Image (cartoon, rainbow, N blue to C red; front, side):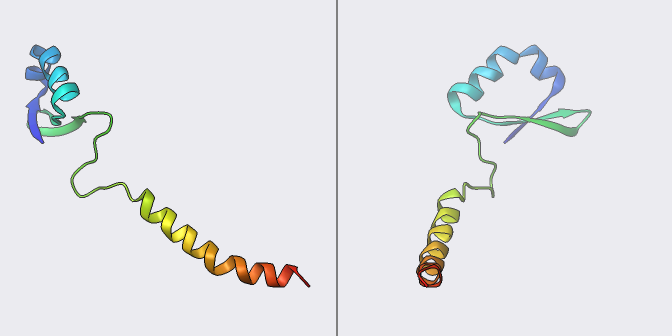
Length: 77
């Protein structure tokens, strides 16, 4: 991600937003040298963060496969 000062962002807002929307660039917005926010595409996944939903669903399905046969045996009596 590139750093961009709040004044530069204000001066180039239209260009920067276009770059974010079309080029999938992301910016750390700074004020007086300190990070205050992030401007990124709506589908942005920060580095080190990833969508683990598929992995989570596989775990849920595995648990169901493990638990369900035992549940059926118990309720069959």
